[in-house]
Length: 93
Image (cartoon, one colour):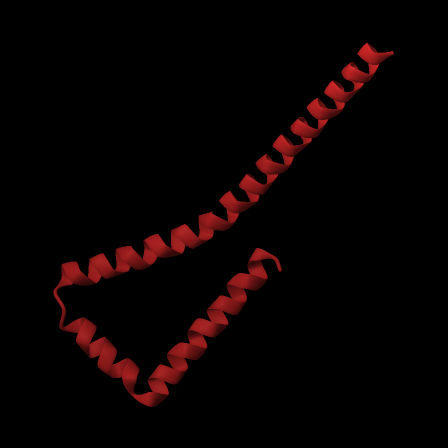
């Protein structure tokens, strides 16, 4: 599944949850509660949410880079093993 598809599904899910909360009457209560908080608390909560979003966005990229690095190191190890095997085989002959 590509990135655009994932983002679209996340957005649809988020909007669906917002719709359910609004229909249940919970969203209005939550917004009035958040509106009563000091401004700096709202900024801290927004910062936490943005940090989480950035973490999730970059964790996929790092995981792919890690897999690529592991694959490259595995190929180097296999190549060295084959060279050692050939060297030993030549010494025996």
